[in-house]
Length: 296
Image (tube, rainbow, N blue to C red; front, side, top):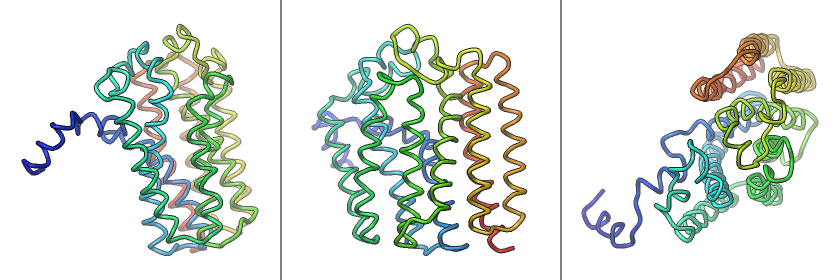
C-alpha cells in the first residue's frame, strides 16, 4: 500500500482492516461453500470440463456475492450482534464502521458483480435479481421462521441454477436436484454453525435451527444430510454419471455419519466451528467425484 493511498484512507476515516473484516476476508469458508455447488453445476452441465471463462466468472461472482451477503447480514443484525459474544466486535456492531461506509462498499460489490452478467447468456441476467433478493431476505428470516437456514440454503442453491443456465441456456431436471441438495446441505452445516450462538440467540429472541431442533439436533442435521445425498444421487442418475461419483457420495455419507454421531453429545462452540469448516472438503470431494464420474 502506497503512502498516498494510506493517507487517503486515513483522511476518509476508513480502516482497511475494518473493511476486510466486514466482508470476512480472513475467513473465506462461506465463499467456498457458495462456490463449490456452482462448480458442481458447471461441471455437470458441461459434461466434464466447463469453459474456463465461466469458472473465472463464477469464482469472482461467488466472492463478491458472499461479501455483499455478509454486509447485508451485518446491516440487518448490528443491534443483535452487539449482544452476542462472538459478533460484538464486528465493525458495524462495534461502531468501527458506519452504516454509510458499509452501504458504499455494498454498492460497489453489487455493481461489480452485476458487471459480470455482461459476459453471460441473457437468461442468467433474468435469474440474477433472485439471488440479490434472497441475499437480502436471509438476514431477516431469523426474525420470522424457526429454520432461517432454509432461506440461506435456497440462496446458496440459486448459484447452481445460474451456473447451469450459463452453460446450457436452459434449466434441465438435474440442476433442480443440485439446487435441492445444496439447500439441504446448507441447512445441515449452518445448523452446526449456529450451535456457537445458541445461548445468546435464546436470550435475545433470535430464531435458529439449532434452537428449534434442540436436543434432537442430530436428527434434524441427519435428515438434511440424507436429503442432500438423495438429491445428489438423483442428479447423478438423471445425468448418467459413472460409479466414481457414487463412490465419492458414499465417502461423504460416512463423514456425515461421524458428524451426526458427534451431535449426540455436547458440542462446544470451537468444535462446532471446526465441524462447519470441514464441509469445504465435502464440496471438494463431490466436485472430484462428479468430474471423474463423467469421465468414466
